[in-house]
Length: 359
Image 1 (tube, rainbow, N blue to C red):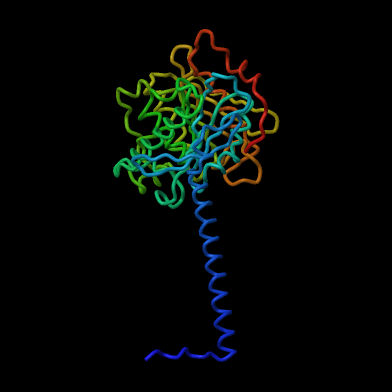
Image 2 (cartoon, one colour):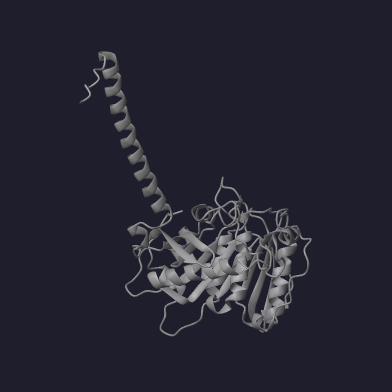
């Protein structure tokens, strides 16, 4: 016997209709929110088609690389006004703790310099799952995490070299704090990949093999860095920038890095000289030479703490009163480029490039 349909009261029927309509609205809102979240996540990790396509000249793009340490995002800047067939130099920039790629670009203003001088910039970004503070794990040699991250960074380098008009013979690496330590580790592990390395407020390789020993090294209470092996004779030239009042990473580390590198390359120190321009902080500079060639430069910024010298105003880890570290790094890097017949100098090429005001 068939059941008779239950007749709802007008009030209950109205309530049911409202509930059904509200449920559909919630479903639509949830679907929309999910789509937006997915789209945003995809854009952030660089999987959108625009990020993976070769960027236009003067472009600020995103990318993603997979390596032994997992996936790592990166930002990439290619200067404007490139001639057809041109292959430009590349500077790899490694941020410090509590920073990301975009913030580091804004702090250093390296893209603005790159647009004027005609070089590209790669900004790899540490994953917070690999380090909650966003530090590169330069000290993780005992756990081999440092080796995995170094290998992943080299894969990022290979990836941009394949995708963009870059000159593999003119690649340098620089970093701040933990990024400086990772930059030195990269240059020591793969010296044939870089023409120069710049450490800003970092710890030299071989000073620590765990997080505990890394903390001691940062405060200047670590052991002496490991003696460089025979392969160290091929390390690329080094520029060290460090504030004399740095209480996060002791300036003793800067001195140790320069000494370690000079020993490896068989270089001798020259007399320290002081350089100051206008009202900016003074630099105490010591060059280390092999013959007439400067292969290591130690530049101590007097009175500066743990900050990027000459960085953008109102940003963390910036000291706008210091000498322009970005300009100093690029000048040092450019001097290390191999001379090639028929290739115009960097200064000549820079004259053909348009100016950009990207971060």
